[in-house]
Length: 90
Image 1: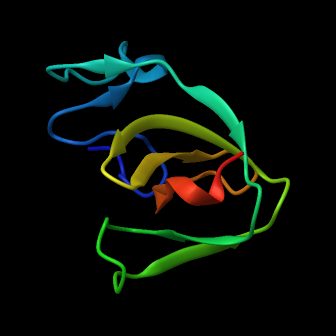
Image 2: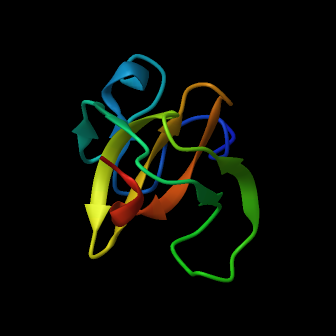
């Protein structure tokens, strides 16, 4: 089983780059975005969930999904997967 903190896999969606390793109902191709402002990368969509990393303005984020005002994806510079506010993305 892959660690969802380091591999972009959820029960409903997975990074297409993992299609040879996991089965998911849907796959998404990453959309590269830069952070326009610093933001916390969180384990869950909830604003009080565990902070995985603090990302800075200019850091890259590979967005895989948007749910309301929250984006889910990969912070490639850290090798971590999590959620952050869409407003933090340029």
